[in-house]
Image (cartoon, rainbow, N blue to C red; front, side):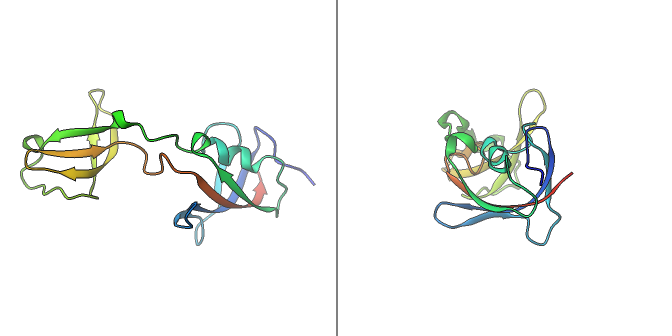
Length: 142
């Protein structure tokens, strides 16, 4: 039976959770995730986790921060003047917003603080700084 190698396109079902058991994503009830192994389409630890699996195999992969979304970068936490917000926006901690950089790229940010004059925004990936655990089932090597 063929084992997964770099360059293969695979389909997997997965259940992703934090080390405390909190689920952050799952393919349950959806089509399997399809990606090309080694092409950078998924985080490094997930990519490496499917190597050598055979169709029907199930395994649990523990992915450290460095092979997931990396550590939190404090330079990506910034204060933004409330006076630059749309008048009808009432920011609250936990709210997710979209910003754009000078090149026009849009990226998500999360409100992590609100004061009289500023809101504090975090542009880190929501899973940055987290070790991750994935239960993976290899459905198909395409």
